[in-house]
Amino acid sequence: MKTIKNILQNKPADIYSVDPSSAVLHALEVMMDKNISALLVISEGELKGIFTERDYARKIILNGRSSKSTRVEEVMTADLITASSNDSIEHCMQIMTSKHIRHLPVIEETKLSGIISIGDVIGHLIHTQKQTIEHLERYINS
Image (cartoon, rainbow, N blue to C red):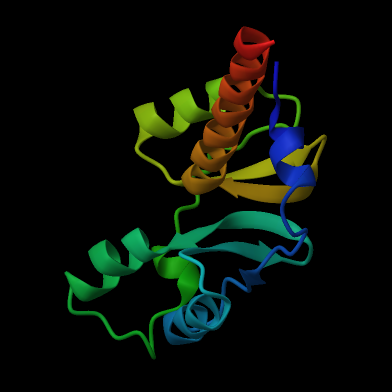
């Protein structure tokens, strides 16, 4: 059974984050610069939440708030759902689908070890299915 560890091994180890007191505008600039749709919110080495494009759309734009004067901690998602690197990919896909979330921080013991997206999960599943098909084709043709 493939686990989240398999996904983390095949993606860059970079973890992008902002401080909870950062302005939302700063978080958006980081997201644009890194071409990502979610940022972890970390203070003094501790994971406090996640800020996503969905948070921005629903909590800033639709409420007429200012990106310059609103702090990330005011609009971030603080009630995080996390995964372990030993969780199966299928289990995490089920969580992401049932909870309607696109990103899962990965925690080992109490330490942040990465973040996976629904794109990472689907990409890994497609790659695995491709390998299975190629293996079956070689078996049938031999």
